[in-house]
Amino acid sequence: MKRRPLILGTAIAAAAVLALSGCASSENGSDADAPASGSGGADYGLVTDGTLTVCSDIPYPPFEFEGGDNGTGYTGFDIDLLDAISKKLDLKLAVQDTGFEALQSGATLLAGTCDLGASAMTITEERKANIDFSDPYYDSLQSLLVRADSDIKSIDDLDGKNVGVQQGTTGEIYAKENAKGAELVQYPSDGELWPAMQSGQIDAILQDQPVNLVHEKADSDYTIVETYETDESYGFAFAKGEKAELREAIDDALQELRDEGEYDKIYDSYFAAN
Image (cartoon, rainbow, N blue to C red; front, side, top):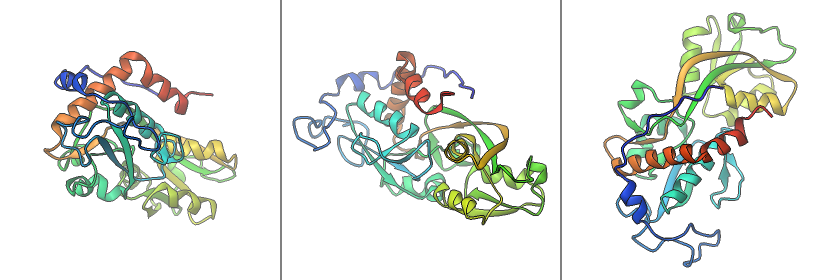
């Protein structure tokens, strides 16, 4: 899987980051470990002072799913990366489970219930009209998952087949444009897509390759028959025209993690070959 080098952004938030004080909170939320009131993220316009509140559509493994030991109740590549970023900003991390459609449209972010969205969201020109994005943090492919004994060998074999897609995603767009003759069945998240596949309600799933790869590895009865280069990059999402200081600080922290090699460690824990 390709990884595209990022250009180092401006250091607008560097002084603010260095000025922040306090340690990351413990799981029991003791005052000794939590940032002092008004100190963590004072210039970022956070929903909750001292806390980076993230909205995400869960589950969507390996990017976000239940578990982990970071105190949020969730883990995954997106969550672990933001946990490392929040530590650099001397902030606690909180995660809210949110529907993807409202998140990618910008409605959830404009409502002010969270500081940013992190949900394996592809940066597109259409979405840029409603939300602001961080620097890209992940490059992805689309893919086609079928039963191992299926007669579907490529996207050209989908005529008359029921193909599951997640509503509002680039996978759905790709399927509409390329899966000729297929009957597209929309689901709100992978949490409904995968059980539908297992129960025989759909013949294939067309969605992000890393997510289908998790299913392929978990059950040998299923296999990815094709992947599709779509030049997709994921970004963290912010309310349009808001949170500029926070977005710049997160871009700087992300670049620091890349420079220090910490990004690669998190990446490899989810996407290394073995």
